[in-house]
Length: 333
Image: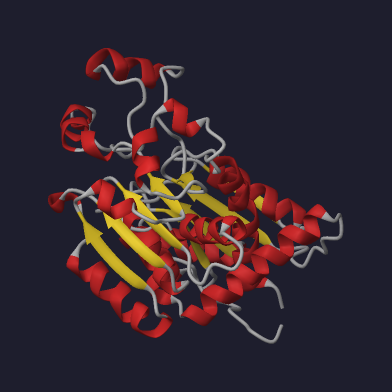
């Protein structure tokens, strides 16, 4: 490989340069094309990945396991009951044990400090599958998806993230978009917006890539002219259920509705969501929230989620290709 990320960890976007980001995106697109053509060449045969999840997942676990098997890797999944990390054994000790047995570790859990400590002591690459603060595997996937669906000949992709921007998706989409040189809009109430530290990091990157960064609390203004509108759930895993009513009141004007999509003024605007999404009453929690809040669909309405503008399942598929690219980039010699 002429460009190497060999041996690096993948824990947050700030650790990477725009050139690193472009390399990972190009590698993901290439691996996706190879897979679809039936011509993928396994480059990780005989390697081993430990997946350590404090939080359950559909897309992240399935993408990692599929990526490993298609690239010839072995994989071990440890759910919250499968490890003593943080209870009977320190994160540092767990890192040093797993680093002796595996070629890489993927972590998904609450605190960014945990994945950073794993990376500091494992001696092998560590991949962040989600923390409360960062979700780099999702932002890489989202940038790839936007590049695939961008209008032909567009000089620069423009997108808005709408909702609570204080946590992983707001942070990671802001940094991922800045690394890719995009027009990034963060649309949220002022008390739910990105921290000054994350904004400063994004602005440093934007100065190099030509990205533009806008923060606004006006949904209609924030989405005007964009190519893509992103959102996320209003209450994350691990947060108290009592927050649903509070967030629903705070974010009522930030729901992605047909009217908000129309406010983009772009008939080709696309809708994106990292999933799972509360867009109807067809789940136990969706029905419970309907009974409590009276909303059929929370952060996005059913008519938007199921519309031709929705590319959420293209987005979900790309978790496989981008996580595979991360594994290959960090481990293939």
